[in-house]
Every structure is written in structure tokens, then in C-alpha cells.
Image 1 (cartoon, rainbow, N blue to C red):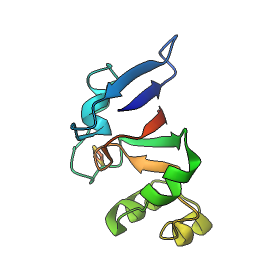
Image 2 (image 1 turned 45 degrees about the vertical axis):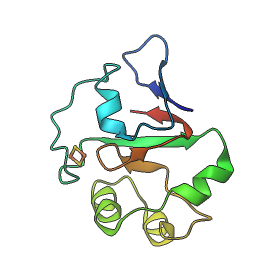
Image 3 (image 1 turned 60 degrees about the horizontal axis):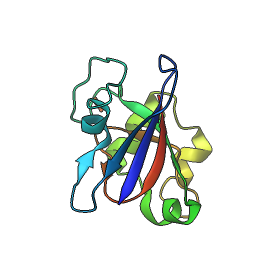
Image 4 (image 1 turned 180 degrees about the horizontal axis):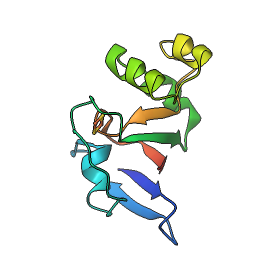
Length: 116
Ligand code: FES
């Protein structure tokens, strides 16, 4: 079992969702259960409005898990979430990007903290 802890400025406490290992869901769909601060989002990896920082509680999992797809990497870069160096390093497992698109990130059994 994993867990997703959502932290956003309007919350006075973190909101936590525990994930059963058999469940796969995007961060965006989980965020809607919390509830997460409302954003108008496309849900398809096109608008960039769902960009969040994702921190793994187990750093070793991050290096194995976080490889950005080409479209996600480009959108995060254009949105100013990735520097030139982070953009170039985003394909290297040893240098996982902090920023992700919540609509493209499928949660499985990891323990992560998500910052809006
Ligand atoms: S909701 Fe538009 S990019 Fe994620």
C-alpha cells in the first residue's frame, strides 16, 4: 500500500490518501477526492495547469520511477517548471524531475508528497 500526501496553501493540514496496491489512478483524479484547490484543467496533458511537485519519501524509488515523457517534459519546460539543465537531465534516472503533470502521473504503490 502506498500513500499520497497533498499539501497546498489553502489547507491547514495535509490531506492524505492511502492507495491500495491494486488501484491505479492519476494524481489529478486522486486530488479531486481530497478536494484539491480547483483549477480549470484539460485532463489530457495539454494545458499545464495541473503541474505539481512530487517528492518521494523513499528517494531510491524516485530514481527508478520518475522518467518524464517527451510531451510532459516539453510542457513543463514551456511552463517554466524545468530549467534548461533540468530539461536536459529529465531523461536520466539519477536526476528525476521534481515537477510532474498530475493528469499524467499514474500512482501505484509509492509513498509521495505532492505540493501544489
Ligand atoms: S490537466 Fe492539463 S496538463 Fe494536466
